[in-house]
Image 1 (tube, rainbow, N blue to C red):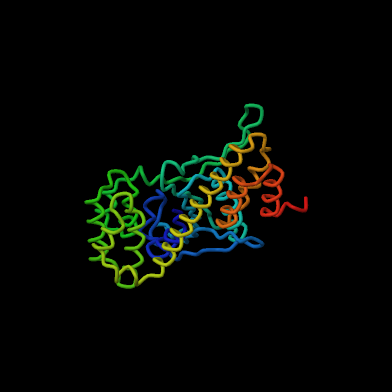
Image 2: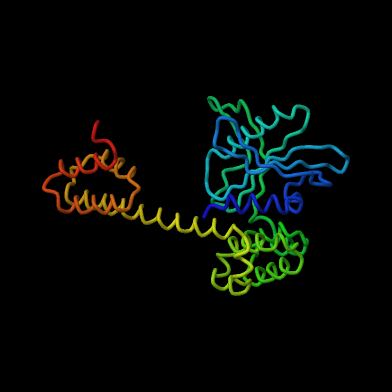
Length: 290
């Protein structure tokens, strides 16, 4: 599951709690913004305006990364450049927070020509699995408490302690959101049903995050189903018509409607010839005019 919205919400609610992760001088968090890039549908995950102990003000651009994306460091560099151009004279620091080892693509952009490094740009990276879960809980910072299931030495018992801490200390307007986010990250350690029983369905239903998470789970299940149907169609095609060109596979993967894939599977099984199957796939994928 991609966790973009819960993480952005967590940063807005508890951004000051997260500042120790970045190993930067900080005394206060002034505000948290989510900015939209011009001529683009992209939004920066979060831009934190931070005041240092010495009174200096700087901008911290944070990119949360929960899945592998080789372009994340370039994207972060672009975000920092965009923010820096609009805040000349204010230091801009970019940081990526990796949620899992599988998402980690490094902490430096290195450009090599003929074996020579011609340019390198270090990126501040936080790897949550290197943080200690018990230390996060003992810090009393609710932002870190909610992230603790992703940290080293996290256990079901620790999740129970995290729930107790949120219930005992979170401001009432934040409690439902923080519990819902905690439940997302605790899922590998505590089954959803058990977490809901412990927290109480009524508390969780007080946040609109639940509707988002449910919609996302449904979308993921539908995507998996479509992938399975595409694979079934490819196997049926290869079994009946081994001479089928590879191009058909590319067309099949452009078809994402389950009912259309069901119809094409029947066609692959029943059609009298490869040409008939090709015509059906071309029509469905929108390539019939080519």
